[in-house]
Image (tube, rainbow, N blue to C red; front, side):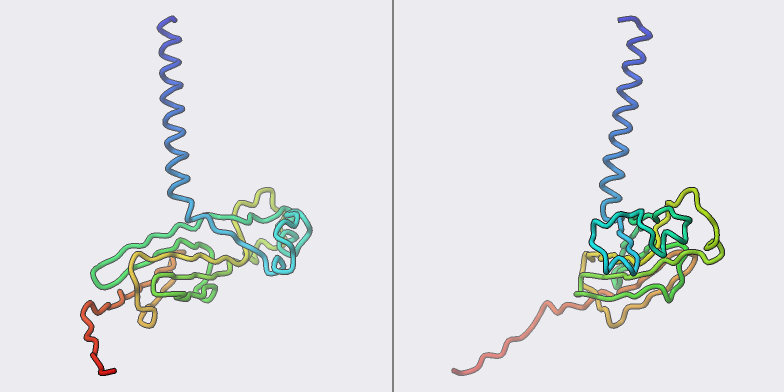
Length: 178
């Protein structure tokens, strides 16, 4: 094999290895961030309904079906006394979110991303943003106290502070006569 062919083969191998590594990392990091969006009318339709049927949502985008899946990046980090959940959710308002603790270790964020009314009469050529209702369930690494939690939304980021739940490691059990 000539030197040039050898170099091309080596370069192609490195490019392929880099590409597959990138896809593996993207898949691992994004698997939890993939979030399904649905229209309010979808509740009455079967899950396999054709996406290009005329619905109020895709009439708004000029006949193109809106994206039904989107990545919603979430960071969970903690300090000694609390966990902080940070969700990137641009284009929404604070009243578009409903946050619930389903258990001391399961946070559920329900939201609704609406179409921009300024562009409602436009005809779209490309729709990559997802619109509609979504729900993200986030498993937390430690139990938290949902009663003392607080949330804020600013600059497209939902920030939820969750105080760690105090677990008593010492409990006295009373012995009773039978």
